[in-house]
Amino acid sequence: MAQIFDRRANTLVRLTLFVGVPLVLAILGGIWYLFGWSDWHRDVGVPVAQPGGGFNHQLHVGLKLDCRYCHNAVEVSSSANVPSTETCMGCHSQILTKSEKLAFVRESWETNTPIQWNRVHDLPKFVYFNHSLHVAKGVGCSTCHGNIAAMPVVAKSKALFMSWCLDCHRNPEQYVRPRDQIYNTAWTPPADQLEQGKKLVEEYRIRSADQLTNCAICHR
Image 1 (cartoon, helix red, strand yellow):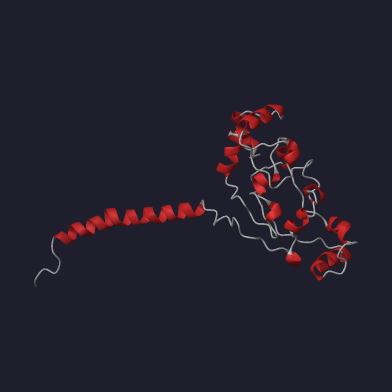
Image 2 (tube, helix red, strand yellow):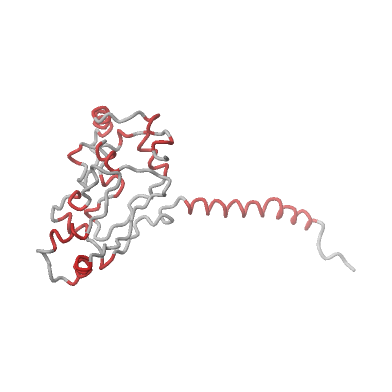
């Protein structure tokens, strides 16, 4: 019987096994790695639906409502806190009292049942983040949360990867701002941010990069 495959087929099989297969696996591994580090994987830019149609940040910030009216623990607590129904009713017992869009708030108030808001920014349990400390040290809301004033429905603006946090901890002068601009969600760094930032780092007594990159700062 005549030979079906040429002897060169042996070389082709070896190349396939020892070069082709590893190459394909490496490419697939690279794609999986990039996927894990992508904004798409972390749902960046994806609005998170909320009960009753949610809370329109764009509308409320446009009415000059200060962030601290709802997130009233942000300067004294590690958590920025989600506003209670009582906070909502502080205004809406007098304003838009018949609005169908606010029926879920009135129902929550009447039944004494908390509104189950859906978290947008939810760090892993092994990460410790203190809102009050960051606010005191000149880190503005929009640095992490983006321009909330432009979001009818809130979505992540940052993937919140550890490498992103470390970039700020290594170079805080690039991010800190005057304390009177902390709640200005449209704030942008000035042309001389590095110069101004270095002064603020000293004024706010921000720790050195070596101290800020110690594992125990965020993992306790």
